Image 1 (cartoon, helix red, strand yellow):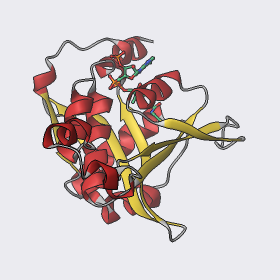
Image 2 (tube, helix red, strand yellow):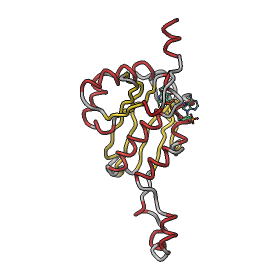
Image 3 (cartoon, helix red, strand yellow):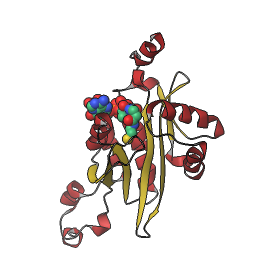
Image 4 (cartoon, protein in one colour):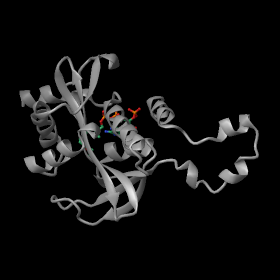
Length: 204
Ligand SMILES: CC(C)(COP(=O)(O)OP(=O)(O)OC[C@H]1O[C@@H](n2cnc3c(N)ncnc32)[C@H](O)[C@@H]1OP(=O)(O)O)[C@@H](O)C(=O)NCCC(=O)NCCS
């Protein structure tokens, strides 16, 4: 009981004290596994964790406060059905005392930025339909609910497949017409660069 209360207790901290690092090797693996095992309903084997972090170390991030790991995001990217190059967010966790302070948003935004820079056209993930926090977080970042997956999880709960499409200026149907417009208008209308994208989400 006392331990449980300790796990719930809000931690006082300044956002600037949180350090974000990308996956740095085997010493980070137990930290990620510990957080995900504690907080996500789906059980994952060590092979699943290794699959993600060995192949896409640049897409996984950890958040530390005074040396303690308080949050993590684990992702991958690749060709989807030979047509779309897309990113996928597999796991996202922030421990309870540190929630509600933007740590998950920062972790996800960092992964998404690397995906964009690597040429991904979109990013997807699944979330339990009952997970209000995650649905609100991803909704704020612009994700839409693309599909409902019946009894997707081992616990029998349905999932929403969430999707965020990245801006693709070369596919914009109005671009040829915009070539005639003056430079000021072009500046107002242009699709966000990856820096602007992360800035945008930093300011949400
Ligand atoms: C979901 C989770 C990662 C959010 O972490 P967090 O660091 O608290 O998230 P943020 O502070 O970045 O939240 C950003 C926004 O998301 C929304 N949000 C996050 N948690 C919420 C909650 N419990 N209820 C309602 N909205 C929530 C809010 O809009 C919030 O913005 P605001 O604080 O300005 O209102 C965290 O609650 C968690 O680890 N949960 C357990 C594991 C999990 O469900 N992972 C997601 C699997 S898909």
